[in-house]
Length: 416
Ligand code: UTP
Image (cartoon, rainbow, N blue to C red; front, side, top):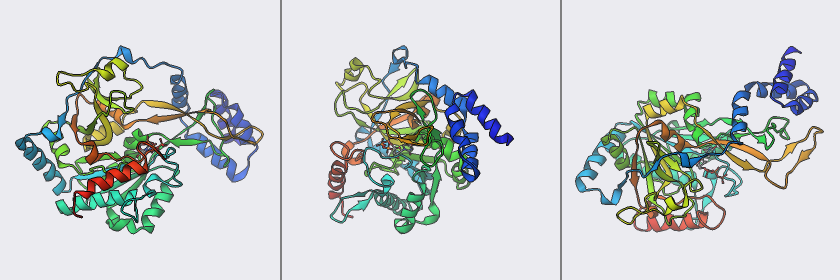
């Protein structure tokens, strides 16, 4: 079979001979499926990603500066009114959409199922994370007299479970026609010596390509075209795991428009100079989120003339993009970061190997790397206790326990 020979040659060219042997041990449907999968792999890109794992990232060569931000608390009444009015006009006219990135694996939380299906133990009977997000959106809909289209990014791994969960719960009363699920892309995992891994299902092991995959998958799945058809002009993009996320904020939206910018984001003040969070800055004249691990210690501690940390605006993954910005970014290739993870695989003799230690490279794009494509962005500092209650870890910081407390404390002040 010529097709199979071509695939063999391709695998040999890219030093993946071990897969040839496994491929030849298969027949019929299983073999066909594996061939189809291998055909879709971009080996040139994979080779480049692997080579990048061997390169050191030299941050010191870059020019890093503080970024300008506005503190929501300190806006004048006039500024607040102007921003709100501008933002509300867009929302009321049905030109605003929300994207929730829910394609992550949630490995730290360890919940069996997509993170949105995790039930947070609030008010006795508890609420699912998706339920909380739906409530936030429904409230905004009521306030502005619209139904905001809600796009949920899933992964190959959790798409079906997410869809079934939402169906079963009747989309928590949200208009079904305004909830659009779309799947993000995947990239193969590589062993530390650059080899593809075979899974138990006799398919090459792949994993979601990071939350930065949101732009290209919005385009490839047709979700971006759907937004355009609906006349959407501004898109909020956030993670699934912040139960206090203000998904519809006319101030951030209006401020971004007023400043003539295409992207905006929220920050909270860094709790201490060495808190493990990414912070906003400008690198080589472009906005950026710099990871705590990449920020030199002296810079992390640097204070400005007001005695505030110069690099103290923490990223809480509440981002805003104009539709043109989404369009532009979706045509670009974002850089991939490498994570080292532990993954089981099948060896050449068909035996499953469960490693004791990390053994694989996983490649992930980060949404904030897209900021680099722009000259500037609007950053709005908000109060942590009002807008940031992440569910990341099973226990300790950013866990269901801390999120429950923050959520209940916040709503205690409101009559619902
Ligand atoms: P995190 O980086 O916190 O990852 O994702 P995670 O998968 O939720 O959790 P861990 O690291 O495995 O414990 C931040 C946000 O980005 C989404 C997540 O669903 C979350 O909302 N995300 C992450 C994606 O949508 N796709 C990805 O490939 C990765």
